[in-house]
Length: 121
Image 1 (cartoon, rainbow, N blue to C red):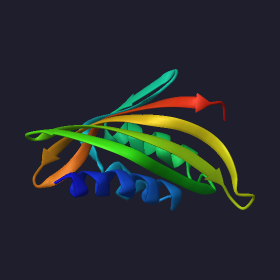
Image 2 (cartoon, one colour):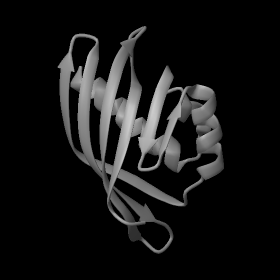
Image 3 (cartoon, rainbow, N blue to C red):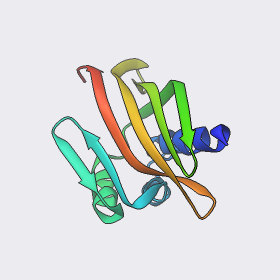
Image 4 (spheres, rainbow, N blue to C red):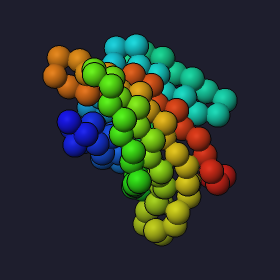
């Protein structure tokens, strides 16, 4: 089950990096939330608008050190991340994702993703 949760988190990075906005938004629960310092976006339509305005980001998100704690149909995950800008291969952002996921119709969806930047962009 932890692998299915990690797959959702990995798909978030891949869909984001490939600017596949619809697939990215589909990884969130209907009232899913993305928050970062100074912003909180709720619901798929608002998320779609936000991501469409930011993508493509011209780089790759890398997540690692993911810790998954599952409790029935909910899971809490913490992952370290960094973003590599392409084509210069420069690390632009280092941070941490703090995620809440829910099991919905057999799929693990992001109910809330909180991003904390560790280094400035």
